[in-house]
Amino acid sequence: MTFSGARNTLGDVVWIASILYVVAVQPLYLRPIEQTLPIVLGLVLVGVFLKRPLFGKRKNAGPALRRVGDVVDGALVLASALATGFVATQYAAIIFRQGAFTQADLVVSVITVVLVLEAIRRTVGWPLVVVCFVFLAYALSGPYLAGPFLHRGYSVARTSQQLTLSYGGIYGIPLQVMLRYVILFIVFGAILQASGAADFLVKFAQSIAGRYSGGLGKVAVLASGLIGSISGSAAGNVATTGSVTIPAMKRAGYPPHVAAAIESVASTGGQLMPPVMGAAAFLMAEYLGIPYARVALAAIIPAIFYYLAAMVFIDLYARKNGIRGLPRHELPPVLRTIREGWPYLILLALVYGLLIAGFSPTRAAFIGIIAASALALVRRVGLRTTLQVLRTAAASSAVLCAVTAGAGIVVGVVQLTGLGATLAGALVDASFGNVVVLLLLVMVASIVMGMGMPTTVVYVLLATLVAPALRIMGIEPLSAHFFFLYFGVLAAITPPVALASYAAASIAESPLDKTAWRAFTMALPSFIVPFFFVFNPALLLIGTPLEVVHAAITGAVGIFLFSAAIINHLAGPLRPWMRALLLGAAILLIEGGWVTDLTGLVVLAIVVFVQRRAHTAAGVTHG
Image (cartoon, rainbow, N blue to C red; front, side, top):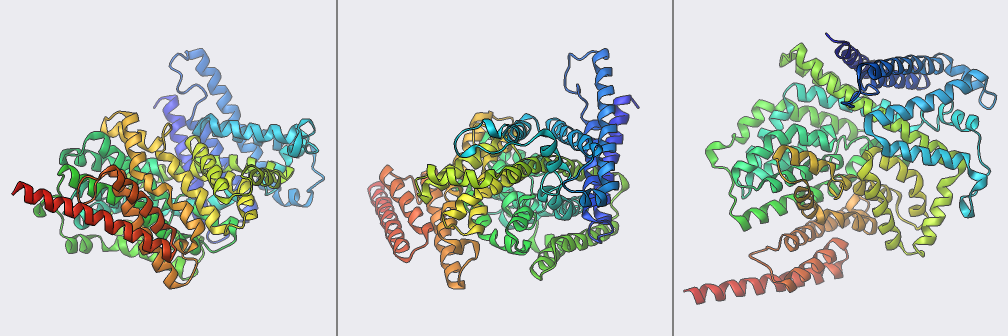
């Protein structure tokens, strides 16, 4: 084995050790969280500097330069172990000497900040690093700023100590949520997939949706939604299901760019689909101080609307282009599929049930891991497969830990300087007190930030910076947080930086820009949904049962009409005035009032009547 291969393997071992440590320690509280945080972060940092060499991607780096890189990487590995080890062993003393830190504390705090920034650069690139530098510069340069952003300013020592020796920075809520909940659910999903859950979910989707118009497109949406509900990763879903669904859709008659667009939209929605929803849902529960089950339940209707928009698009596109479902003999029978894979459904239902019953996400995920491990033993999952899924889960967890530590830097600076209240006032002033204008500003910020950073980081930044402004304007907190989470997710399919679309395009061998714009238009109805659950919280299950049912039904019809207007097809091709009326009717229906609903339905009736009359007249003429 080469030196680079050995260090890469060692990095995998360290990362796997980090998630196994969390699984073994966190659910049973065998170590205090104050000690677990630096231990896990230390393992993550060591793994990053082992697996991501300083000059690893530079083809022009000669032997001498690579040797220098190896020395630097070795020094960073050692520094990571010492800095986090110091905090892990001295955590009790550090808590007691808050405000009276020693010289050793200062050195460790500065080194830790540098290590985290470099780890972020090596895992997700420069965008988040630049954001962190901007906030650090803000903390240091307060006296030199003007207007509402002027503040007293803080020294390097004070800033770094706030970020690393308190629990409001790097070791703050974002990283704590990773350890308490997210890593456990990632491991749960990985073990499920190792035991064959992904294959079962694809077959299950085929048995349910494969026979209908545009069948394989609907299978892709359903399969990606089901798999996304346990993985919560857009790019991961594209890689997992896209390698199967995209070639199948192409064979069924979908153009490559349309097949890639369908998969990218379907995979992106996994971050909105309970129970995992990426890491952001757990963060939302923590920030709002509500049970995670409440967040998961509130996400159901928005997630259904998202996938309904995709399904309607596929159905109308398939009818318009004559793409039929699979023949019955090619479909796996529903009952046989369920009989073969019922344990997976039981496991998912078990986790859902525990959350709804009031179990903490930590306890629910831990029980799920034990049950999934038992299933893997029964299924005789081999050691190689087990190690592979643990390696994948550990890599995903390590990247999330690195970026949430970076998000902690931003949160720490905001808490130190009071920037949150300052920015909230500035946003309210910029919107001239108009809620719609403020929401548009937040939407743009969410999408722009989501283009360059993971959804988890985008959520943390917006929850820290813009949530206070939305609260000032009287928006219900759960609605406000779902609003910017939803748009942070949609950034993955929003040009010009549509990462999920680009990943799907590489599998489909389709043009990147054509794929990205098709995915964007396909998901366009979903872009209006967040505005309406702000003004109609019944879509988040806030209200009476009648209000919730009313909002869900009329909203679903509105999504259907919006999709029909976008695809330019209902019972047949639409005239321009019909498209305009359908868009108006869709907005009226999704808004949720009885008067607007009746108006929308009248508009729909007019369009359908005119289309049928024209179709009848054409038939008579033809006859």
